[in-house]
Image (cartoon, rainbow, N blue to C red):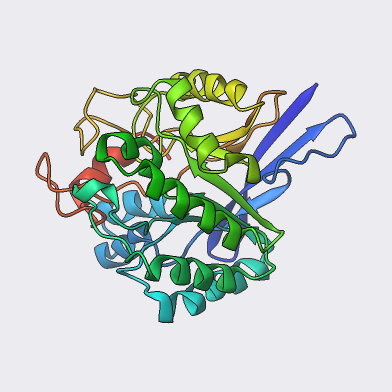
Length: 315
């Protein structure tokens, strides 16, 4: 019988989610087994909580800030010359309390098919930027979610070949660190059909990594994503997967860009129930805009009113 225990451990001023997963007396190869996930102290939510200075808003933002959430790496924020030091500092901080950081690498050339999150590194710079990230991670344990939306957008953008090549190269560079666990982004349940997504993942080298991630920055229910990811996994020889539950507490309204009326989903938890799912994670940072739609600020910017609405979900 599989047993998963999720606990909150107070570590100084930081609350860490401890993911303990056992199967009888056996040891699981799930990277989240026994892991305490890293809480980034300089997240958007943490900064907002400090600025709100003890108000009711501060308490709501603080609740979001205490949940372990992925750290997004963008070349615009941390270029090649700076990102090694940035990542290495996070790894050093995480090592103090034996925590596991989760990074999102989001810098592929022609990112987001020139939509709200357009940008990314140049063709020649991208491999160097990835190598700089790998240098910052070093030998420390870490999880990397690689390039949200890149594969799912590739068919409509006509970039399949280039996207697959960039991802294969990134996997090779990041995999130089044996303790780095990589999940390629696999879209979500209301996007591409499982067979098409599986083919894209296979072409991008998913067999060389732990597996794939779904629902990143989207709102689909965990059960819908689990059904979809399981179908994709079966087409890939039981590849493992993680699901983003950061904003799926009310499910999807059919909108993907700052839909109103959503709430945060279940807190991060390891999963070892005999399925291919490794974990549910908060990959998107709740309160950060999807783009200039439905009254939102530019993609990635903190949006206090949305954060307050999401936080009512009960973190």
